Amino acid sequence: MDAPSEIELKLEVAPRDLTRLRGSPLLEGTGQKIDRLVSHYFDTPDHKLHRAGYTLRVREKRDGGIQTVKQEAGHAAGLFVRAEWERPVKGHKPVVEPDGPIADMVTPRELRVAFVTDVDRDARNVAAAGARIEVALDKGRIRADRRKRDLCELELELKGGAPEPLFALARELNAIVPLRIGVRSKAERGYALAEGKEARVAKAEPVLLDPEGDARDGFAAIAAACVRHFRLNEPVLLASGQPEALHQSRVALRRLRSAFSSFEPLLAGDPHHIPLSADLRWLAGELGKVRDLDVLIPRIEGQGRSKLVAARALALGEARTALNSLRARALMIDLAEWLAIGAWRLRPAEPLLANEPIETIAADLLAYHRRRLRKRGRHLGKLDDHHRHKVRIEAKKLRYASEFFASLWKGRKARARHADFVGALEKLQDHLGALNDRVAAADLLHRHGVDGPDPGKGRKKLLRKAEKAFDRLMEVKPFWG
Image (cartoon, rainbow, N blue to C red):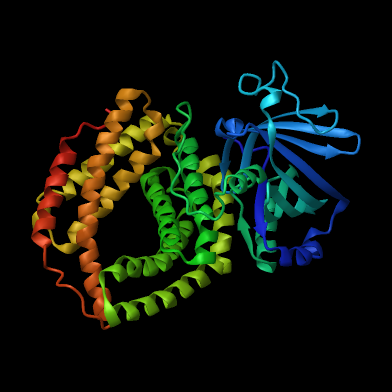
């Protein structure tokens, strides 16, 4: 597998830091061009094109406009891959060509302006270690009816040479000003503004795998989806500290770590695999300290709750410090590079495994995790806390794998079997989670000098429910069979 011939890395930057970037010696280049780019995005009132995965844009020019239709084929941790059709238009109204990609979806009469982006772009060509990189610094605004949001981005696009210098440049710039991987296109941000869905907590989106792809394609798509899940929630968490934003950020990291674990044989020969895993574990741990308190606080009343709320504020501050650190920001850039051009992808230690069809790999992994869960969950009611926690971890891995690979088994029957399987798995996870929370709560309460409910009360009942849920899960027919 060769390195991608086109790489475009999108990075979010605070408006106040853009001036520092413009004057950085790292961005001294040739062919500097400053433009004002005003783009009108069109769609039906119910956003039919957006729901189908298309965007229709007309960008203003002095002598008319340029119409662009894009189909989102995928995005991976700041790297965007899109099918694209361009044509000139007279004025600023879109044209629906009879043989064009959106002809079967909309008519010109249906189209309305959904939102407008008005951006000042400072672009130049930069040479870095033999690579030619086009650098674009965008500052402007998105408007949708009366709603407005600032937009400030740095885009690095590889125009020639090896891709490694592009990521090296991103890391050097990140050391000068805080940069964060962008996972939303301008169009996606515009639609979020138009639909009033900005700054919302995001749950994990379905992972759409190519059934013709191999193990590398599958892992890259899964990992990219996890990075996107994290980055959609990180700004909400930093701005608000919401428990649900923190929970979803942590879930995203946990899912990514689970994918690392499931695909361990594919990644084992890559020298960056272990350091990346360690950084993900560190960041998840920083968020976990807050999450543990979030779970406990609603169960405690009076002065004890006040103590825990104060402890939560302190832990949240430490989590924000971690998220804002160079280490955390660099981790996301490192992941973007690794997913695009890592040794595991270009020079796999096990070529036969790397080229194995993803559907085969998926079935093997699901069966493996199910066997592990069956083995570890025997005599569940008699296990001590430590070994029961291992059962819980294995259940999570099976749950995440079931979500990662769901798109490979299509049809009504397969979907029904998947729903039954995941439903039984969720019940087991709920009971195991409740048991684990009791153990964690006792330790936290002791640490903070707070009295709480008796952890043994109702424990036998929960254990019986967990045993019953485990037995039920083992009876359910696997959806991948």
